Length: 596
Image (tube, rainbow, N blue to C red; front, side, top):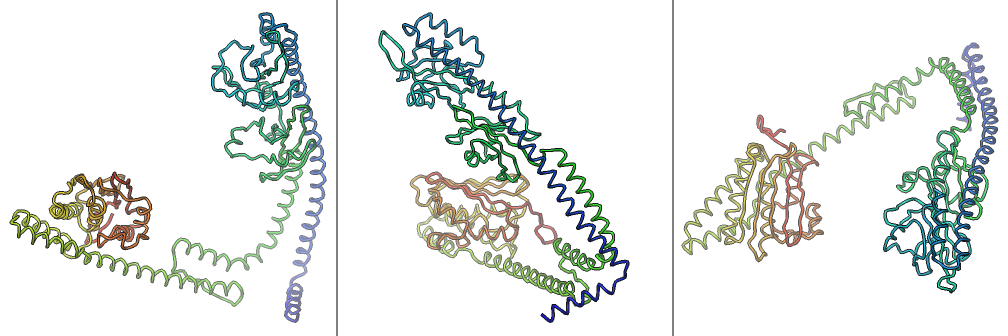
């Protein structure tokens, strides 16, 4: 408690030490800001409440008017349906020409009727309009309007909007009215399904004329399952780009409530259409409901801004002294973000900012030391990798080659002996390269050509090969010993166990400003799981035997030297072969250094 009391007394002493002018000005400013904020909030809330109440009432009236118009329209369509029903029931025999004429008259006088048809309970068309051919495979008896008519005979059912697909060449958006009725056919009563399709365009135009502010709209759902019957942005709903809180709307039959499920406060007004179970939902955005609300809020906002500016001008001198060291610290941090780790903040005083500046200087020093250490470790690792790679020529390859030379010499195959020893000498000459780690593309291709000559003789012409290169690519530089592990992998794991003759194709080209080596074989291929682990380095050693350098080692060399955008890409299909792409930057040697 004593430290708190000391701090409070110190603050009081500081306040008392100020001039009377400062105390009066500061006190008056604070009181004015507090009073204006309280009065502004009271006035704004009062106006907002009145505006919201008026908007609630207005939206309810608009939605009720839409509901009334829709009910009148649907009642008219129901009367048309009843007229068709009466004409069919009163006919002595179905079908007959007189009934067809009467239905044609009704059909032609109502532009919003798309079709009318009478079906048996098995889906057979008894009579109907228009006189068009029915489409096959419509699964008529499984459609919702047909099922509703059978489940509730003598009850008029309205379907959800859907594409009318009964007749060939007609794909209109309709609402189907259906009803199960009893007719006389061939002198005997029978059950049938009467269908009248209404063009949904008429209802769509009715809803589109409604305006609830600049962004407000009306949409309709089915109260039984919340299915979307109409929405002015239907495509966005289906694409998942717009969301409506249908679950909340289903809880209401009539009334209004505020919804914030979309991140914006919206006024939702609901009215249920009688008989058909549709819910008309009006959506208004609270941020545009009443112009006076915005004007009042704008006026209050500008008034508060003016007061704040006045307060800022009064306190500018004091705040500058407090914020100056913090701004200096922020400026230093921005330089560190830009990569300058040699920044140092001069520290004066022992307050919080001073202690923070000391910590910042210590942190930057530590980061600089760690970065220097990381660079040294990466350089040492890179040199070590290159040294290991230069000395890591597969001893099994050399041993097997010399054994093959001995066997061929004993068999009198002097020409093959000469060819193999010549290729072996060229192979080692390029491998050593007088200690260089960077060689030309032409030298790398010559190196792999000698390797393939030796392997082809060893494997008794079990495979053929082809090496091609663009003239443009030959002078560029590359890390040496990149292709040997890939070709060795193709021979040992792709071709060695094949029954047919193998084929290896090697190309070098310049593609999209990069150097591309491609090694393609027609071998057994690599299983997908093994292919994935090959480059990730998770393949066990006993499974990945072959090249002493290894595919993963090649990938590491490339990315260690040139970064993540470069490296290997592999595709393989079992029993078809494997394609390995090696992507490198375009390099030219200048002053003993390889540069792009």
